[in-house]
Length: 128
Ligand code: HEM
Image (cartoon, rainbow, N blue to C red; front, side, top):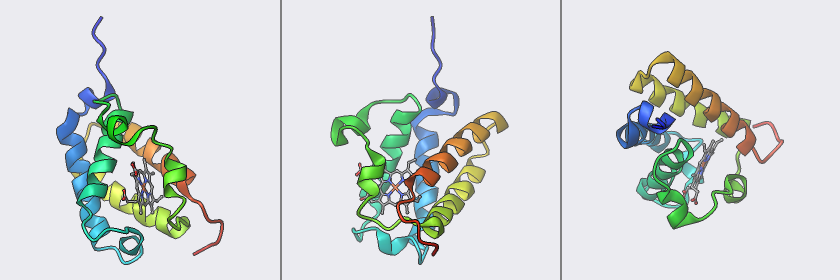
C-alpha cells in the first residue's frame, strides 16, 4: 500500500529548500531577528531548519541523524523569543510560503503548523 507523505505531496526536498531559503533571506535583513543568530553565516541554521521540516513532514530522517531528538523548545531557550520575535519569524515564513504557491489545502496545513509551532516557541512572557 503506497503511502504518499505530505513531504512528497508538496514536492519533496526542492519545496522545503525553497521555503527555508526564502525565509532566511527575510531573516538576514530583519533587525529584530538577525541579532539572535549567534553565527555570522546563516547557512548552517538554514540547513538545520530545512532538514528539521523535511523530517517533520515525512521526508528523510537526516535531521535527527545529525542532531538527535529535536527538543525545539529547549534548543531555543538560549534565545529571547518574545511575541515580537515570533511575529517577525511568522511574517518571513508567510512570505516564503506565498512564493511557493502551494495548493490551498497544503498551504493551509503547513501554515497552521508553523503558527502553532511559533506560538509554542515563545519563551518570554514580556511584551516586546
Ligand atoms: C534554531 C530563532 C521558531 C526550528 C534557531 C536559532 C534561533 C532561532 C536564533 C539558532 C540558530 C541555529 O540553528 O544555530 C527562532 C525564533 C523563532 C523560532 C526567533 C520564533 C518563534 C522556530 C519554529 C521552528 C524552529 C517555529 C520549527 C517549526 C528551529 C530549528 C533550529 C532552530 C530546527 C535548529 C535546532 C538545532 O538543531 O540546533 N531558531 N526560532 N524555530 N529553530 Fe528556531
